[in-house]
Length: 301
Image (cartoon, rainbow, N blue to C red; front, side, top):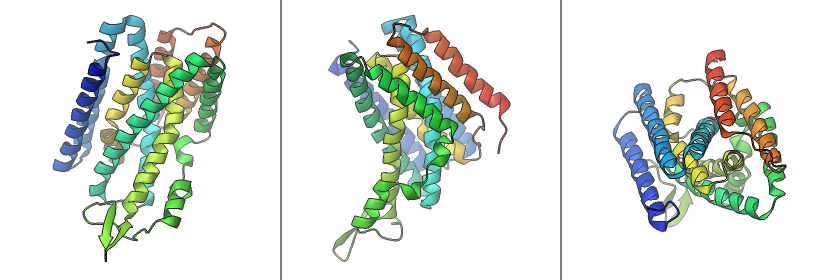
């Protein structure tokens, strides 16, 4: 089956849908303990890394290394998403039973946004040479923002979309027991606070897509590798969220390490405009070194 054929993409997305349904049904049936979350994080990482064998079969060693690099990069960047999600759920005091489904929807829309941004990004790079400088500058600026605080500086109360929704939509003060986004009261439709939470999550997805998509395009310009590594990386975000929620603290140096890596990707991106291509194995070794260094040098807060 050709990787560019509609049949392949149909089969690929059906497989992803099955994985997401398994993940959703699992968290509806069981308590989300630390051990349980750790097991499922391991399962989804294994699934994501196993897909690299198919990339190797189709494209060979070079794109295989780029897939692994892209996957690890996107997974590490996704950790910043998780801490923003934690801040949003805490700020809105979201009932625990409502969180799995909101995260499920967050992953669905994150996949859509990233597919759209990657497609547009690849098209822009092929059509306009100067976009290389733009994407490189975006990555360097993203590295600067992360070095200054990254996800920790996000304040859900200042989300403009949420503020507009509060101003123009009829919002109930309390959550619905069934976890609904919209309810009918006295023949009038009202939005519950959970709808505001969903808006905050989705605007966060868009914000992080602006960082993650240039990062993966700095690693590979092949749409197949860029897209599949992104999707596989966000596949296990729900499990990662519950793992972190159960007490795994944010690594103090992880943000600084990612800031350095984004800065490096930005410079490497711009160098390609001058015909200088940094070998893919250099990026892979660097991201692994940053990840290991963060674990070895950080302490729990």
